[in-house]
Amino acid sequence: MIVIKSIDVAIIAKKFLVKGYNIEPSAAKMLLELNPKNIDEVITEICRVANGKFIISVEDVKKAISAILNNKKRTEVKIEKREKKEEIKVLKDITGSSFCEGKVEDFIAYFNSRFEKLSKILRNRIRAVEIANIGKIRGEEVEVIGMISNIREISEGYLIELEDKTGRINCIATGKLREIAEELLGDEVIGVSGTVRGKTIIANRIIFPDIPINGKKINKKDFYIVFISDTHFGSREFLEKKWKKFVEWLNGEAGNGKIRDVASRVKYVIVAGDIVDGVGVYPGQENDLEIIDIYKQYEKAAMHFDEIPSDIKIIVSPGNHDAVRQAEPQPALPKEIRKIFSNNVKHVGNPALVDLEGVKVLIYHGRSLDDVITKIPRLSYDKPHEAMEELLKRRHLCPIYGGKTPIAPEKEDYLVIDEIPDIIHSGHVHTYGAGFYRGVLLINSSTWQAQTEFQKKMNLNPNPCNVAVYRPGGELIRLRF
Ligand code: D5M
Ligand code: FE
Ligand code: ZN
Image 1: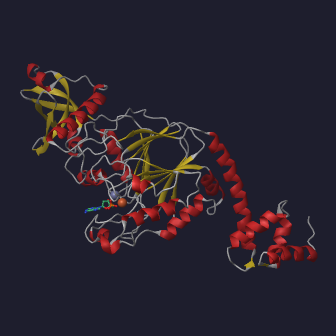
Image 2 (image 1 turned 120 degrees about the vertical axis):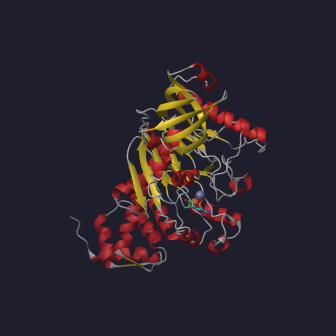
Image 3 (image 1 turned 90 degrees about the horizontal axis):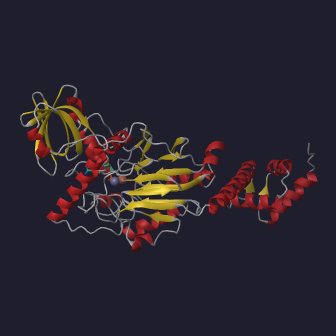
């Protein structure tokens, strides 16, 4: 046991005094009991943490010690991180490849691409015949693949009109299939198997492109990915104090032991759109804006991203409030805005498929979720990941055409989920939800904006300041600030 003499306490007090601080005797005793090897370094840290306070307390000493310990951990992890050369690979992104002009021909090419890509996925599962050839078959089982051009309720169930490149056919869904047909959105590409009766097919199965049941196994990693979205910097409703808590946690200055340790292992932060609140996005927005200049909004965003430790890579994808075209797929933020951000910020489009050391993350802001949730009564804003499941089942990020989500008719349909990702990350709906579907992790990471007057009028109840933290192949943590 260390015997503390008053002379030692006086020496410590003097060391603080020369730095312009007083220390409470109990705090000095605590420091002596701890007897650190690098006492001068610890004293400097205590003064830094005290940040202008004149009298150092026991609390200040504790804070400084834990900051030092944490910093050590961070440096250790940092060294590990630096050793890895390859980091973010962008596998799919419209940025720099948008050529559409919105002409009629563009729409034809766009829908051809959508049909080709989705029917290719379906052909792995069923042996379909072309619709034009169905007339030759009678009373037999057939399988067809088509895009839904029309769907309506009839007395026996639903009448689904399917279309491929060779023609159109009506399919009737009755009995048990009624429940599935009820949730069809229109415009999606599906397979139908059934028996031919005259010019119609009596369906006995409706097949979605979907993903295999045994699905994915996500590679195990020792780093964590943090998922956030809809920061809405520039809005009066931006929750600055909560954001501060979040960055404190990332800097190893908050949370208990385990959560603190998790922070030191975070390597990537992904932001799924609506970085800023923008201007002129909805009626009366002027009253909700703290910053009315769009560039200044992004300056604020960059400043807040700089509060995140610089060894963490930040991946930023835009949303419908950002300064890029509204129609999806959206390219990354323009150059004059990108340059406002630090080098650890990587800008991608919406959607974008990125590979983080072998973990594939599909980032999509999630505007189509409004359409999907409105159309399927079983779904709700409380569980946005369940609506995301419907996108994965249909292998399309925006299955409804002509809803609230504008689509740019690119020659290739970038919204088809052709490669199965490990994770899909969305935002937009301002509520939190996360869960696995056939091995794919679906995350909707809410917002940092409190309810706006406009949202109040629209009866939208956000659940802000939720963060998903995931170690690939390991644990999924929900943090609320
Ligand atoms: O969208 C935040 C949420 O608010 C999202 O669920 C869409 C919803 N929203 C936004 N505008 C409207 C209108 N005009 N009608 C209905 N619902 C709406 P954000 O993209 O952050 O504005
Ligand atoms: Fe938003
Ligand atoms: Zn949005």
